[in-house]
Amino acid sequence: MSITSADSGNGKSRREELLAVATKLFAARGYHGTRMDDIADAVGLNKATVYHYYASKSLILYDIYKGAADFTVDAVHDDPTASARETIYHFTHRLLVGIAGNIERAAVYFQEGPYITEWFTEDQVAYIRQAEAQVYEHIRDVIDRGIASGEFYDCDSHVLALGYIGMTLGAYRWLRPQGRRTAQEIAVEFSTALLRGLIRDETVRVESPLGIELPSTENAGQV
Image (cartoon, rainbow, N blue to C red; front, side, top):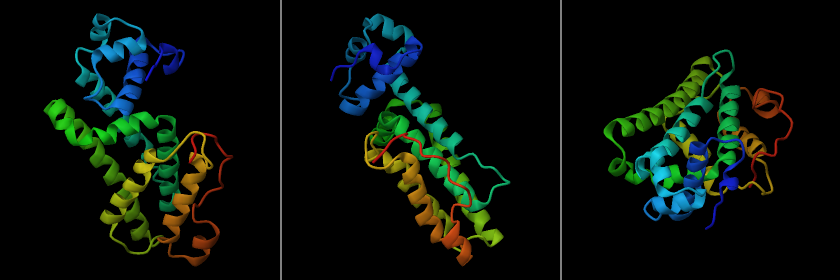
């Protein structure tokens, strides 16, 4: 796999460029299969310069993880004035469009997940686990809000939140930039299917399950 510095995008700092290249290499070869020499060669730097930006390979991986975790927490921020169904749709849209924009980062996050306790410090692992817990709690709480208001049928919000996380965050496996459906269109499909199983009011369920007027199509990643 050959990656030049231009492949990581113009206008980035050298550190951001290095991180983008490392993300591509980790996604393609795995963390263990990528050496610091490989990263230096791919970004067009000598290894000493790479170590100036990152003292170890594990710190590069942690920055990838932290970026993914922070993005996911930000994507599920809640607007308390929105209905529960609107909120679920907005979560789904932001998550899928964001994943489509950086599939390699999502791939690294999930494929290296079983091993982070070996490579990260206790504080780094705690940061990632706290972010994951925040995402779960945000989603569960929105479902609970919909149940409490009578908008949603009663259900096990714990199970549904875990299922939702798997449905959305696992999309990196098949979401493709040049596919048949955009990430936005997939968000509509996912949200509509889920919400039609939750919404109590039959008219709302059939006519406006998302609770919003759909924005124009964005070519942000496709399947």
